Length: 396
Image (cartoon, rainbow, N blue to C red; front, side, top):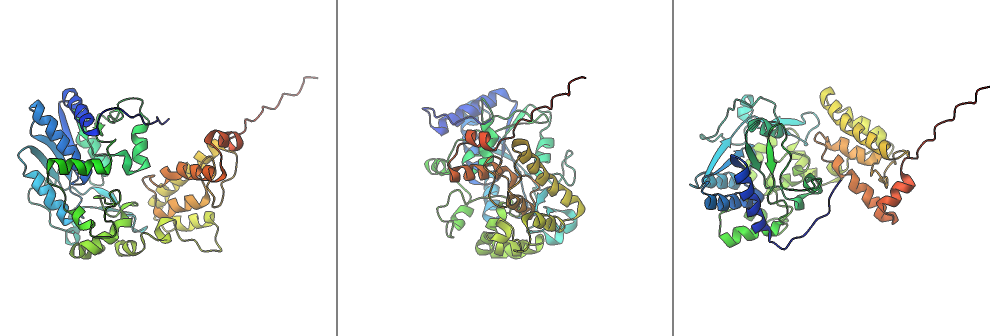
């Protein structure tokens, strides 16, 4: 269940400071998950304000260095590391990341010790390259949970609902304290700036006359000029980020030359990442979408094939739970949003993390808007019909 937005007579900056003060009093330690991006910058600046007032300096922060990072981002994080009011731990661990550029190698490990000759850049001498709770093959999420497991600490992240519907749903399910998650495996996460806009973030930097990541200045000289939502600092090879690979080639050519050798398929994804080939999947005319899905799955190794097929089968079950209708070929179903074309998109993108599938509900909304009906009307028209139990034959 999602809860409607409620507006209050208080600006987002003051509200965030209020939330942070509550967290500092509730937990033994507040940890800023710092990526070097604009959102984690706003998060850090607010934490510094509160920690200064409460006498809690320096602010604790962690930076997970993912190797293939814009040079200005690294320079900026170094400057943050040298601030006296910040205690930043810089980790370089072989964390498992998604490689959506290739079906043959759908994952890669940054800082893989056996691939040092392929590293995009040298590991900083101050980096922490080992951790007692880290095991090779861990994802970022798994290590984040292991890193702070069973401690009275809260990890605060610069997640904002404006960034995507997936992030909105992350907080909209909660009845109260939208910014504070239910502890998972003994780890508490909080999102104190979840209700900020991109303009709010940059306004804070400007008003405070603070330092920021100069990557945004470089990106602003491209077609993404003033596109605040399109300017992202994140790992480059995942399903969503690969659409921005062209930025590395255009803005950081020396680094790009190393990136195309770092993971298979990077050069092709940079060229075609914003075309039908990567966005919806190319399908031969004589092949149905259902047949195409099987053809795509056959390109994966057995392990990865099972992972993608599991996500697709989950969406098929979701459809069947809501309606008795067959899955449409192309037009999203008005109730479930499912179609064989959408499932084909999941297969083509290798939806290991379920990110593509989370957009299926919005597909159904689009169809309802197109035919002019509400969700309740769709449930009445297309929802599962209750089956009447067959009466027992009368005893003779």
